[in-house]
Amino acid sequence: MQNLSHRSQDYSQPGASVRVWDGFIRIFHWSLVVLFFTAYLSEDDLQTVHFYAGYGVACLITFRLLWGCVGSHHARFTNFVTSFAELKSYLKSLTSRRVKHYTGHNPAGGWMVVLLLVILILLSVSGLFLAAAEGEGPLAAWYVSGHWLYSESVMEPLHEFAANFMISLIVIHVAGVLVSSVVHKENLIKAMLTGNKNR
Image 1 (tube, rainbow, N blue to C red):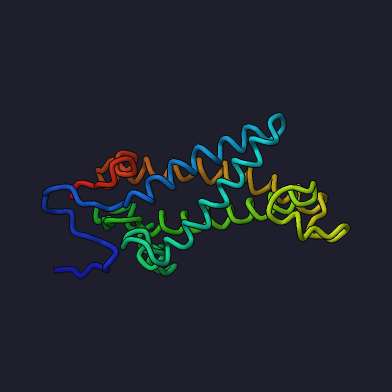
Image 2: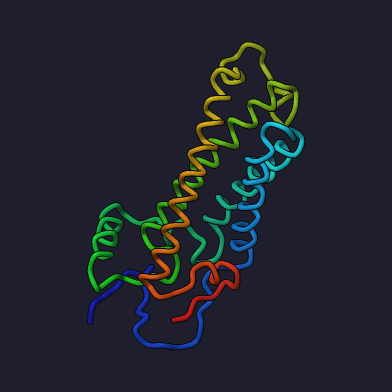
């Protein structure tokens, strides 16, 4: 019998559903969707809404990083951040009939989570510096006039790049979820709502 890593699970035997995503992960995921798009769509005309939605995103990311260290089994980074060799093996297996099934994130999904978090951190930090330059936000008390960190010529292009890159990643993420749902014969969107996957 083939040995699978602790991140994968044999789905060959049908059975009851298994709890994968805890309540915090589900609340985090859907709250992040709402807050990110609220911030993205309110950028030009509703600055107050944009700022508070951005602060909300920053808070969510902070809690997610902590939860990735001390949270439930499938929420921890050690559970889904794989080696590049395992990522390559998984992507290669997608073209065969022997695709590994993972209880939590598969290697591609796991690395997408990491990339999304990195870009969201970049987006949040650049946004906080831009707010500080206008005398707002938690960094305003440490504002240093003329410092390059607070320069709009540096932070604004960086902020806009991160926001637009996030849109591209979201499109890829959604496409990956749909493909993975078909390949693994499981409804990943429903799983993120209920917290459960069928074996």
